[in-house]
Length: 72
Image (cartoon, rainbow, N blue to C red; front, side):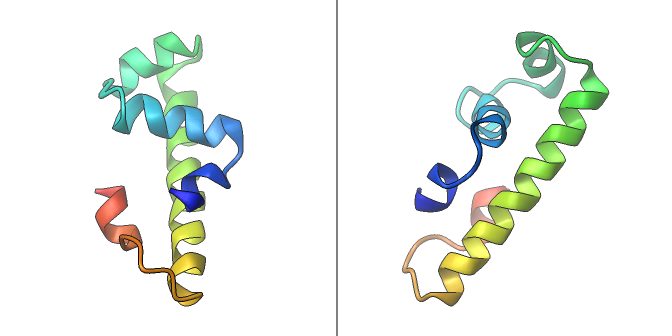
């Protein structure tokens, strides 16, 4: 959870719309009033940043879930 909290608000927003709220990308794009393509780019970048944050946490010895488990 620390990795997610450390992300920018924009990144958390797209990740949570898909993962927490369960929205399909098209609906999430509509909720954010952006195109599907723009949402797809934002989601891809946010996932990449989250994976990097989780990797840093793993290397620091954090006992949390691995990045691969979270991103699936």
